[in-house]
Length: 311
Image (cartoon, rainbow, N blue to C red; front, top):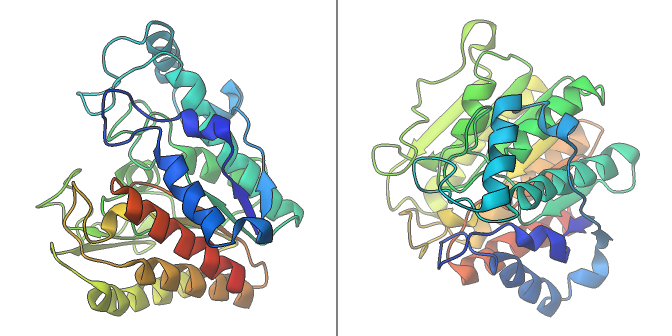
């Protein structure tokens, strides 16, 4: 089990009491150490993604736009949720690089499971920032897995309270990207997408599963719908599994309305690891995603790490 959670990764966070502050990494690390999980895991070292890697998913114009905003630290990268700050380009590229380091460890056989807490920036589109996400490390990883590393069928599973729209719409017509997302119904929460009838376009029809849940949905509701997710994934036999395990779906998050506990996150991690083992590769990469209650971050993310260690 590899965990990439070094100090450079923690630089991705917005100033001025923004919900996505740079203290989120420390919230994870404190609990990670106190539970005694750290000595049981390999420690990974993050790196900055190269421009060539960013351009696997993002447009050249957008990459240069972020670079320019990063130099002066002024303005916003989107309509207002994602402010620029000095060094934001470098911080976001470090997140992408950390995700790629973790994936490389799985593909090389160094580890079968991996976790990156400050990662899973699933709202960024190919040509724009959105929802606290500057570069979409999930999208870059999916492209790199298939273009450079010979992995054809990738599963992207998302249990963050918010729909993973940046990933979904980038690959909506791509039949090789298997997508499953449990999220709060877009009628009540940003980004307003992820309807149940959004199942993929053209040749990708049926390869995408969106499960919108009502505000207040709890572990019992999660457990019922999670079986739909597992059945969906098993049909496609993915060669690599990505889990975006945002902690903002836990009860008590300040900006969402789901009522899960960390037990749902542990169950998801355990069952995905079981599926990966059944398929013969064992590869599960978990990415921290959202979460704005620091206690929930500590609880959910460490539940995922513990589950992956035990499975």
